[in-house]
Image (tube, rainbow, N blue to C red):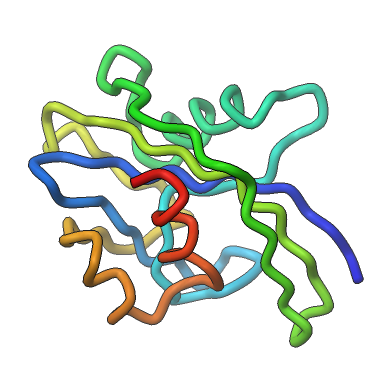
Length: 134
């Protein structure tokens, strides 16, 4: 089974969490809802990669956000694609929702109460990752 380390960033504002719908051109889980996420590139720590993904995918810079929590790694196996994911979850606070600017990787965003994440068609383990940082 192939192994990949990824970050998943939950951005919180006014007790709601940002989730994004993955576009058709991403490599896996097209049209599923997720947090801001990405593969951890060689030479980057998980936190470094989280900051990179937040800027690339949501247009958010370090001055826009505060780090609220870094959770334990969550391991999810997806036998359908023969992949073991090591998910490094983070939670950030955001003061201004209107600062979010999606790039090509995501087609839609929603601000939701965390417990409703379970009702969306998400990437594997999204709510479990939230549980690690709430």
